[in-house]
Length: 424
Image (tube, rainbow, N blue to C red):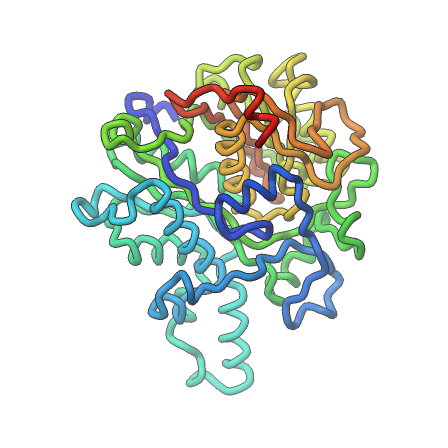
């Protein structure tokens, strides 16, 4: 992100909608405690499909958070994004960000599939009742760019907007794109990703992925870095962040929760997991270089954790390739094992967890994983107290994208003392 070198980028707001919590506080508490919420899929029309287990967002009432005008023209994935964006702006103290200068606020989201539930409903009407029964919003609600458009319209934001379509790793690429946008002069960017891939049509599409876990038992369906790894479990949800110019954030006395320090991305081809070792290691090295960060400075790694034996092995080896001996010693975690992989939303949820982990001085556990069979220090069973200054977040996509993001603890944040860390 050399283009933003003169304008460091701060994370000042976090909004979350996830299977283990529909607000940031609940999400962090669940992640810290290693709460396991994967369960049998309950969505209507999915019972006959071989995909049995997922991370569903339950208890989410979009009508309580989003105006009816937007609800009728958007899919569930955009509902998640709008709710998370509203929470992130409130957290950053920017609920009225567009009031004075709408052109100073941009929006960037990443998406893997768009609005499958909305699209399926309208196509069923077309098939069963005819074209006159298809709603006018079918043309936009399914589109992968819908969340960016609706968040910007709802907030009145007229700054640079964009959509990143670079596989699941696009969640990290979107954060980097937002940081570059700040570097080029935009004051604030709302950035993130949320997915809703559990409609029947969407699930049928996913069955083409050989990496997808079709295990019947939720406790055995997603166990990366173990000999029992049998693929990944999909999930709904995601997270949205507010990023802004660091000096601007300080000037308005905002809490600087973290700094986006470095990013790099590579491509190694669909399902070519052995080659992802080289690609991911190169991405890690590039992110470290951009951040001016030595391998030994990384205090925690939030792993991609695909759950495929070849992919897990490649990731473990990529850490030692890029970090040297430190790669086997640095604490590694994968909170997504408790909630599933929400495609582009998954790495943004990890970014949120990494920021919260640095604030709280806790490395959250990798839920439901015990018998680790790779040479990494995977944190399991319980959260581990630690002073965390720098975090590395990793992501890979099924189509071959690899990305790494380096985060620094917010400047001025007091080191988390050990006594309080044990109490958290």
